[in-house]
Length: 141
Image (cartoon, rainbow, N blue to C red; front, top):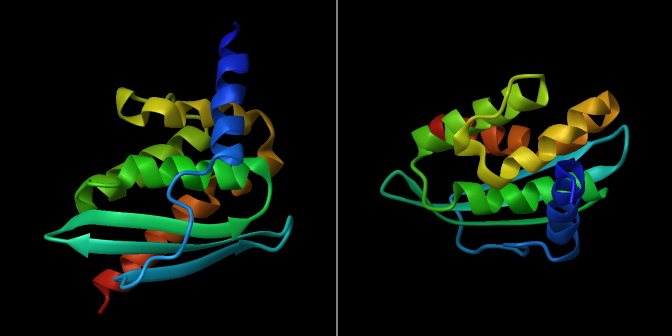
């Protein structure tokens, strides 16, 4: 199996069987994100405890890339400190703009193939940009 095929399977599995889908109450962060160019939408919920992401969920609709990215992101950030999450967000955005993924990316590296299609990069980064916005809003309280 070629690496691209493996990556495609990972993305399609997350799209077909999204992890951490649903609402979360109570929450500390609830942030909406949308890409009006293609219609991708999501709402991201975080519950924080002692500076860590205790629980994370998302609701949304859109293309397989945006929904798989949201699913994979929720798995990647659960249990991490807010500083670790911000580092991961920066690394993911860097990967989507041409940087080679580091070991910290794990399965998220499956999304690096999206950068071959610049129009789809916004689909993959939508959940991550929303996460960053939510953390910024939380920090500003």
